[in-house]
Image (cartoon, rainbow, N blue to C red; front, side):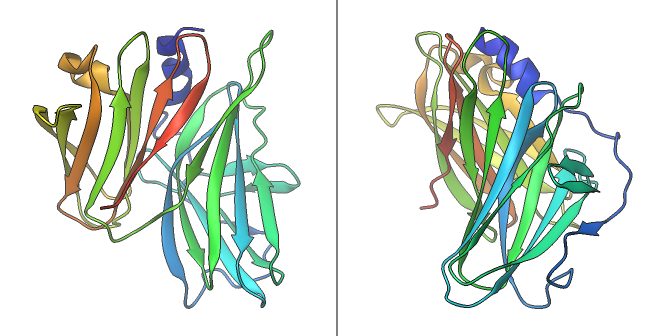
Length: 255
């Protein structure tokens, strides 16, 4: 499969399809948690051959509560269908001491839904999403989307658009009330600036796009993208697509 076809499958946005409602299922902890650390998972995908597994792992020798809230690309709550759970836009639970939980989306819908996840954990724990693409006649491909801390205003993502490779980015604005302006400074391998661009994201909004679709001059180039925002609530990751089919994530670095 060509990278552009993969991008059409992964990056098509479907805003406005979901009811603005909050649900909680499988709750062994109160929703919302009263005191918790916040982090953000910048990309999930479900349907049209895609499914996402969410893994929360405790690092403590006591029970740890967690809360996962799902948002669509237009910032509204997004009900998601799960294996062994009814559809919900929020899941809460308690990890046993040194325990973990894996929550899988159903992945059977014909239409692609994508967005992001807000994570609250009331202790030391790790959270990540692993999204999988299944296409008949070839192996499944997977990539991880780790949770990143909120409250950062600067991060760096590598990109590579050479030799048939294609890099996309997923961004989210985790602020409920403010529009975020993300300024991209693209640098080539020699450190020289290839271009400076700005992307605006509304409250709780999410965007995903191939860099060369929006900034054509990045075709045939590789380097890094420094992203600086006017709020401390923006998170993101890169996705590198191989022309033979596989893809991988390019995680954000927080200098």
